[in-house]
Length: 311
Ligand SMILES: Nc1ncnc2c1ncn2[C@@H]1O[C@H](COP(=O)(O)OP(=O)(O)OP(=O)(O)O)[C@@H](O)[C@H]1O
Image (cartoon, rainbow, N blue to C red; front, top):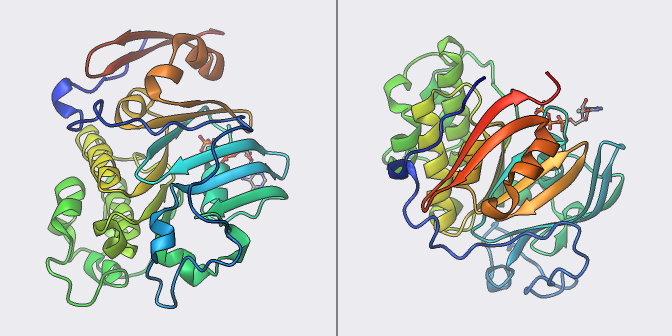
Protein backbone atom coordinates (compact mmCIF):
# COMPACT_ATOMS: atom_id res chain seq x y z
CA UNK A 1 0.00 0.00 0.00
CA UNK A 2 1.31 3.44 -0.84
CA UNK A 3 0.33 6.71 0.67
CA UNK A 4 0.67 10.22 -0.62
CA UNK A 5 1.85 13.20 1.32
CA UNK A 6 -0.77 15.72 2.27
CA UNK A 7 0.22 19.33 2.77
CA UNK A 8 0.58 20.48 6.33
CA UNK A 9 -1.58 23.35 7.51
CA UNK A 10 1.47 25.57 7.36
CA UNK A 11 1.95 24.91 3.66
CA UNK A 12 -1.56 25.92 2.71
CA UNK A 13 -1.82 29.31 1.06
CA UNK A 14 -3.11 32.07 3.26
CA UNK A 15 -6.84 32.64 3.05
CA UNK A 16 -7.36 29.69 0.74
CA UNK A 17 -10.56 28.58 2.36
CA UNK A 18 -11.88 32.05 3.08
CA UNK A 19 -11.80 33.03 -0.52
CA UNK A 20 -15.11 32.98 -2.33
CA UNK A 21 -15.03 29.85 -4.37
CA UNK A 22 -15.47 30.43 -8.06
CA UNK A 23 -17.63 27.51 -9.05
CA UNK A 24 -17.36 25.84 -12.40
CA UNK A 25 -20.34 24.18 -13.94
CA UNK A 26 -19.79 21.18 -16.11
CA UNK A 27 -22.63 19.89 -18.22
CA UNK A 28 -24.77 22.77 -17.14
CA UNK A 29 -26.56 24.34 -20.03
CA UNK A 30 -28.11 26.88 -17.69
CA UNK A 31 -24.80 28.14 -16.38
CA UNK A 32 -24.90 31.89 -16.09
CA UNK A 33 -23.86 33.89 -19.11
CA UNK A 34 -20.64 35.82 -19.05
CA UNK A 35 -21.13 39.21 -17.51
CA UNK A 36 -19.10 40.89 -20.23
CA UNK A 37 -20.58 42.28 -23.38
CA UNK A 38 -21.41 40.25 -26.44
CA UNK A 39 -18.29 39.39 -28.39
CA UNK A 40 -19.58 40.87 -31.62
CA UNK A 41 -18.54 44.43 -32.16
CA UNK A 42 -16.08 44.59 -29.28
CA UNK A 43 -12.35 44.72 -29.53
CA UNK A 44 -10.90 43.15 -26.42
CA UNK A 45 -7.34 44.10 -27.06
CA UNK A 46 -6.00 47.33 -28.36
CA UNK A 47 -3.26 47.30 -30.98
CA UNK A 48 -0.49 47.10 -28.39
CA UNK A 49 -2.16 44.24 -26.58
CA UNK A 50 -3.30 46.33 -23.62
CA UNK A 51 -6.70 45.50 -22.31
CA UNK A 52 -9.62 47.86 -22.32
CA UNK A 53 -12.34 48.19 -19.75
CA UNK A 54 -14.64 45.69 -21.49
CA UNK A 55 -12.25 42.90 -20.57
CA UNK A 56 -12.24 43.94 -16.95
CA UNK A 57 -15.98 43.35 -16.83
CA UNK A 58 -15.80 39.90 -18.42
CA UNK A 59 -15.95 37.45 -15.55
CA UNK A 60 -15.69 34.31 -17.65
CA UNK A 61 -12.18 34.43 -18.98
CA UNK A 62 -12.28 31.13 -20.85
CA UNK A 63 -15.27 29.09 -21.87
CA UNK A 64 -15.79 25.86 -23.74
CA UNK A 65 -19.08 24.89 -25.36
CA UNK A 66 -19.88 21.56 -27.02
CA UNK A 67 -16.26 20.90 -27.91
CA UNK A 68 -15.17 17.72 -29.65
CA UNK A 69 -11.54 17.07 -30.55
CA UNK A 70 -10.84 14.13 -32.88
CA UNK A 71 -13.04 11.77 -30.89
CA UNK A 72 -10.75 12.14 -27.87
CA UNK A 73 -12.24 15.14 -26.06
CA UNK A 74 -15.92 15.83 -25.49
CA UNK A 75 -16.85 18.80 -23.32
CA UNK A 76 -20.35 20.19 -23.20
CA UNK A 77 -19.73 23.29 -21.08
CA UNK A 78 -16.91 24.57 -18.90
CA UNK A 79 -15.97 28.01 -17.73
CA UNK A 80 -12.94 29.47 -16.03
CA UNK A 81 -13.46 32.71 -14.19
CA UNK A 82 -11.12 35.60 -13.60
CA UNK A 83 -8.82 34.89 -10.66
CA UNK A 84 -9.69 31.20 -10.59
CA UNK A 85 -7.10 28.55 -9.86
CA UNK A 86 -8.13 25.36 -11.64
CA UNK A 87 -6.35 22.04 -11.39
CA UNK A 88 -7.21 19.38 -13.96
CA UNK A 89 -6.69 15.81 -12.80
CA UNK A 90 -7.40 12.39 -14.25
CA UNK A 91 -5.66 9.15 -15.25
CA UNK A 92 -3.27 8.81 -18.19
CA UNK A 93 -5.00 9.41 -21.50
CA UNK A 94 -8.03 11.06 -19.86
CA UNK A 95 -7.68 14.11 -22.10
CA UNK A 96 -6.12 16.65 -19.71
CA UNK A 97 -3.44 17.87 -22.11
CA UNK A 98 -5.87 17.88 -25.01
CA UNK A 99 -8.27 20.06 -23.02
CA UNK A 100 -5.49 22.40 -21.87
CA UNK A 101 -4.08 22.85 -25.38
CA UNK A 102 -7.58 23.38 -26.76
CA UNK A 103 -8.15 26.09 -24.15
CA UNK A 104 -4.80 27.59 -25.13
CA UNK A 105 -5.93 27.84 -28.76
CA UNK A 106 -3.21 25.42 -29.85
CA UNK A 107 -5.64 22.66 -30.86
CA UNK A 108 -8.60 23.58 -33.05
CA UNK A 109 -11.67 21.58 -32.05
CA UNK A 110 -13.55 19.67 -34.75
CA UNK A 111 -16.79 20.96 -33.31
CA UNK A 112 -17.89 23.45 -30.69
CA UNK A 113 -16.31 26.65 -29.53
CA UNK A 114 -13.62 27.88 -27.17
CA UNK A 115 -13.86 31.55 -26.25
CA UNK A 116 -11.44 33.88 -24.55
CA UNK A 117 -13.12 36.94 -23.05
CA UNK A 118 -16.27 36.00 -24.96
CA UNK A 119 -14.41 36.17 -28.27
CA UNK A 120 -14.06 32.87 -30.20
CA UNK A 121 -10.49 31.59 -30.18
CA UNK A 122 -10.48 31.53 -33.99
CA UNK A 123 -10.86 35.34 -33.99
CA UNK A 124 -7.68 35.86 -31.98
CA UNK A 125 -4.36 36.37 -33.72
CA UNK A 126 -1.45 34.40 -32.31
CA UNK A 127 0.29 37.67 -31.40
CA UNK A 128 -2.70 38.92 -29.38
CA UNK A 129 -3.07 35.54 -27.72
CA UNK A 130 0.60 35.47 -26.75
CA UNK A 131 0.28 38.79 -25.01
CA UNK A 132 -2.49 37.67 -22.65
CA UNK A 133 -2.02 33.97 -22.15
CA UNK A 134 1.02 31.78 -21.75
CA UNK A 135 1.39 28.02 -22.07
CA UNK A 136 3.73 25.42 -20.67
CA UNK A 137 3.33 22.31 -22.79
CA UNK A 138 4.51 18.90 -21.61
CA UNK A 139 8.06 18.11 -22.73
CA UNK A 140 8.54 21.68 -23.92
CA UNK A 141 12.25 21.77 -23.16
CA UNK A 142 14.27 23.81 -25.57
CA UNK A 143 17.60 22.36 -26.71
CA UNK A 144 19.36 25.62 -27.59
CA UNK A 145 23.02 25.87 -26.62
CA UNK A 146 22.33 28.92 -24.49
CA UNK A 147 22.82 29.87 -20.88
CA UNK A 148 19.68 30.02 -18.78
CA UNK A 149 20.02 33.80 -18.66
CA UNK A 150 20.31 34.08 -22.45
CA UNK A 151 17.29 31.82 -22.89
CA UNK A 152 15.13 33.68 -20.35
CA UNK A 153 16.20 37.05 -21.73
CA UNK A 154 14.10 36.31 -24.85
CA UNK A 155 11.06 36.49 -22.59
CA UNK A 156 11.92 39.36 -20.25
CA UNK A 157 11.39 43.06 -20.61
CA UNK A 158 14.75 44.63 -21.50
CA UNK A 159 16.74 45.66 -18.42
CA UNK A 160 14.11 44.31 -16.10
CA UNK A 161 15.44 44.43 -12.53
CA UNK A 162 15.74 42.04 -10.89
CA UNK A 163 16.26 39.78 -13.89
CA UNK A 164 13.95 37.17 -12.35
CA UNK A 165 11.15 38.85 -10.37
CA UNK A 166 11.31 38.11 -6.64
CA UNK A 167 7.99 36.26 -6.54
CA UNK A 168 9.17 33.86 -9.26
CA UNK A 169 12.62 33.44 -7.77
CA UNK A 170 11.16 32.60 -4.36
CA UNK A 171 9.30 29.61 -5.79
CA UNK A 172 11.49 28.57 -8.71
CA UNK A 173 15.01 29.40 -7.47
CA UNK A 174 16.59 29.72 -10.89
CA UNK A 175 19.03 32.54 -10.16
CA UNK A 176 21.66 30.09 -8.93
CA UNK A 177 22.12 28.65 -12.42
CA UNK A 178 21.58 31.60 -14.73
CA UNK A 179 25.07 31.17 -16.18
CA UNK A 180 24.74 27.43 -16.75
CA UNK A 181 24.10 25.98 -20.21
CA UNK A 182 20.46 25.01 -20.53
CA UNK A 183 21.15 21.48 -21.69
CA UNK A 184 23.39 20.79 -18.70
CA UNK A 185 20.69 21.29 -16.09
CA UNK A 186 19.00 18.44 -14.27
CA UNK A 187 15.45 17.50 -15.29
CA UNK A 188 13.86 19.35 -12.36
CA UNK A 189 16.06 22.41 -12.88
CA UNK A 190 15.05 22.48 -16.56
CA UNK A 191 11.41 22.28 -15.58
CA UNK A 192 11.81 25.23 -13.20
CA UNK A 193 13.44 27.25 -15.98
CA UNK A 194 10.63 26.35 -18.40
CA UNK A 195 7.98 27.40 -15.87
CA UNK A 196 9.91 30.63 -15.31
CA UNK A 197 10.06 31.19 -19.08
CA UNK A 198 6.30 30.68 -19.41
CA UNK A 199 5.52 33.13 -16.61
CA UNK A 200 8.03 35.74 -17.79
CA UNK A 201 6.34 35.78 -21.20
CA UNK A 202 3.37 37.67 -19.74
CA UNK A 203 4.93 38.95 -16.51
CA UNK A 204 3.63 42.55 -16.87
CA UNK A 205 0.10 41.15 -17.25
CA UNK A 206 0.59 38.79 -14.31
CA UNK A 207 1.78 41.65 -12.13
CA UNK A 208 -1.41 43.55 -12.96
CA UNK A 209 -3.53 40.47 -12.26
CA UNK A 210 -4.62 40.21 -15.90
CA UNK A 211 -2.79 37.11 -17.08
CA UNK A 212 -3.99 33.68 -18.15
CA UNK A 213 -1.63 30.76 -17.59
CA UNK A 214 -2.03 27.18 -18.82
CA UNK A 215 0.49 24.74 -17.40
CA UNK A 216 0.62 21.10 -18.49
CA UNK A 217 2.03 19.00 -15.66
CA UNK A 218 4.27 21.73 -14.23
CA UNK A 219 4.97 19.59 -11.14
CA UNK A 220 6.63 16.92 -13.29
CA UNK A 221 10.23 16.41 -12.18
CA UNK A 222 10.08 18.92 -9.32
CA UNK A 223 11.20 17.85 -5.86
CA UNK A 224 8.55 18.00 -3.15
CA UNK A 225 9.63 21.42 -1.83
CA UNK A 226 9.47 23.01 -5.27
CA UNK A 227 6.13 21.29 -5.97
CA UNK A 228 4.53 23.03 -3.00
CA UNK A 229 6.38 26.27 -3.71
CA UNK A 230 4.99 26.25 -7.26
CA UNK A 231 1.47 25.43 -6.06
CA UNK A 232 1.70 28.38 -3.64
CA UNK A 233 3.01 30.68 -6.37
CA UNK A 234 0.14 29.69 -8.68
CA UNK A 235 -2.36 30.33 -5.90
CA UNK A 236 -0.79 33.71 -5.07
CA UNK A 237 -0.94 34.77 -8.73
CA UNK A 238 -4.63 33.84 -8.84
CA UNK A 239 -5.35 35.85 -5.69
CA UNK A 240 -3.95 38.84 -7.65
CA UNK A 241 -6.63 38.24 -10.31
CA UNK A 242 -4.83 36.00 -12.78
CA UNK A 243 -6.53 32.89 -14.10
CA UNK A 244 -4.46 29.72 -14.02
CA UNK A 245 -5.24 26.20 -15.18
CA UNK A 246 -2.80 23.37 -14.63
CA UNK A 247 -2.88 19.63 -15.07
CA UNK A 248 -1.54 17.42 -12.32
CA UNK A 249 -1.20 13.84 -11.15
CA UNK A 250 -0.95 14.85 -7.49
CA UNK A 251 -4.54 14.57 -6.34
CA UNK A 252 -3.86 15.69 -2.75
CA UNK A 253 -1.87 18.74 -3.75
CA UNK A 254 -4.39 19.71 -6.40
CA UNK A 255 -7.34 19.31 -4.06
CA UNK A 256 -5.69 21.61 -1.52
CA UNK A 257 -4.26 24.26 -3.81
CA UNK A 258 -7.09 24.86 -6.27
CA UNK A 259 -10.34 26.80 -6.26
CA UNK A 260 -11.79 24.29 -8.70
CA UNK A 261 -10.93 20.75 -9.63
CA UNK A 262 -11.81 19.44 -13.08
CA UNK A 263 -11.72 15.66 -12.88
CA UNK A 264 -11.41 13.98 -16.27
CA UNK A 265 -12.01 10.44 -17.45
CA UNK A 266 -12.07 9.02 -20.98
CA UNK A 267 -12.06 12.38 -22.74
CA UNK A 268 -14.83 13.87 -20.63
CA UNK A 269 -15.05 16.02 -17.52
CA UNK A 270 -16.49 13.56 -15.02
CA UNK A 271 -16.85 16.16 -12.25
CA UNK A 272 -15.92 19.79 -11.79
CA UNK A 273 -16.25 22.19 -8.90
CA UNK A 274 -14.98 23.13 -5.49
CA UNK A 275 -12.46 20.49 -4.35
CA UNK A 276 -14.35 19.54 -1.19
CA UNK A 277 -17.44 18.88 -3.29
CA UNK A 278 -15.85 16.82 -6.03
CA UNK A 279 -12.80 15.11 -4.48
CA UNK A 280 -15.02 12.54 -2.85
CA UNK A 281 -14.18 8.90 -2.29
CA UNK A 282 -16.91 7.82 -4.69
CA UNK A 283 -15.78 10.08 -7.55
CA UNK A 284 -12.05 9.50 -7.08
CA UNK A 285 -12.49 5.72 -6.92
CA UNK A 286 -14.61 5.69 -10.10
CA UNK A 287 -12.16 7.86 -12.00
CA UNK A 288 -8.81 6.55 -10.79
CA UNK A 289 -9.83 2.93 -10.02
CA UNK A 290 -7.93 3.03 -6.75
CA UNK A 291 -9.04 2.89 -3.14
CA UNK A 292 -8.88 6.24 -1.38
CA UNK A 293 -9.02 7.32 2.25
CA UNK A 294 -10.22 10.92 2.57
CA UNK A 295 -10.46 13.01 5.74
CA UNK A 296 -11.76 16.56 5.79
CA UNK A 297 -9.85 18.83 8.17
CA UNK A 298 -10.55 22.50 8.84
CA UNK A 299 -7.78 23.72 6.58
CA UNK A 300 -7.06 20.86 4.25
CA UNK A 301 -8.32 17.70 2.66
CA UNK A 302 -6.26 14.67 3.55
CA UNK A 303 -6.28 12.29 0.61
CA UNK A 304 -4.46 9.00 0.74
CA UNK A 305 -4.23 6.78 -2.30
CA UNK A 306 -4.31 3.12 -1.40
CA UNK A 307 -4.10 0.02 -3.62
CA UNK A 308 -5.53 -0.10 -7.16
CA UNK A 309 -9.03 -1.57 -7.09
CA UNK A 310 -8.37 -4.24 -9.69
CA UNK A 311 -5.23 -5.67 -8.04
N1 LIG B 1 -1.66 14.13 -31.35
C1 LIG B 1 -2.50 13.14 -31.06
N2 LIG B 1 -3.13 12.48 -32.03
C2 LIG B 1 -4.00 11.49 -31.75
N3 LIG B 1 -4.31 11.10 -30.50
C3 LIG B 1 -3.71 11.72 -29.50
C4 LIG B 1 -2.77 12.77 -29.71
N4 LIG B 1 -2.35 13.21 -28.51
C5 LIG B 1 -2.97 12.46 -27.60
N5 LIG B 1 -3.79 11.57 -28.18
C6 LIG B 1 -4.67 10.61 -27.51
O1 LIG B 1 -5.70 11.35 -26.87
C7 LIG B 1 -6.00 10.82 -25.60
C8 LIG B 1 -5.83 11.90 -24.54
O2 LIG B 1 -4.47 12.26 -24.47
P1 LIG B 1 -3.97 13.39 -23.50
O3 LIG B 1 -2.52 13.60 -23.77
O4 LIG B 1 -4.86 14.56 -23.60
O5 LIG B 1 -4.20 12.69 -22.08
P2 LIG B 1 -3.71 13.13 -20.64
O6 LIG B 1 -4.88 13.05 -19.75
O7 LIG B 1 -3.01 14.43 -20.70
O8 LIG B 1 -2.71 11.96 -20.30
P3 LIG B 1 -1.35 11.90 -19.42
O9 LIG B 1 -1.77 11.95 -17.99
O10 LIG B 1 -0.81 10.55 -19.79
O11 LIG B 1 -0.47 13.03 -19.83
C9 LIG B 1 -5.07 9.63 -25.40
O12 LIG B 1 -5.79 8.46 -25.69
C10 LIG B 1 -3.97 9.85 -26.40
O13 LIG B 1 -3.46 8.62 -26.87
